[in-house]
Length: 105
Image (cartoon, rainbow, N blue to C red; front, side, top):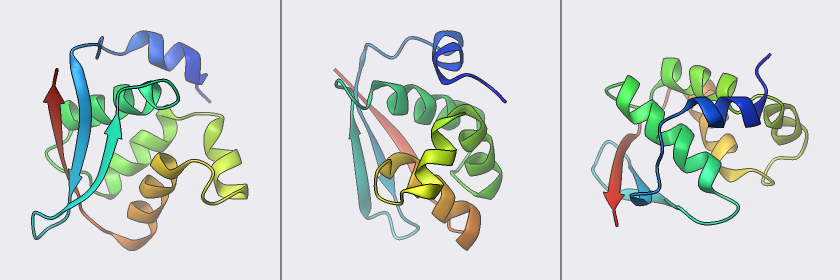
């Protein structure tokens, strides 16, 4: 199992990103992750997923859950506490697909 802090250190710098936007199949925005304290790690992981996968599907979600490391157990035990992890769990279970866009500063 990965360590979340080590994972974040290995990922590309995202300081130039203002937020990550997520869209459903109908191109409706379903979520926005702001690059601010408390969600900077999620921005890094979702940005990495955007660069590695064409869409956020089951394979991307499974990989993203690996990157969130030890926080996934907590998210599974306390749904709603980690919304950005909950979203990946939902995609993994429901075969949902989302599209990711990074908005620069």
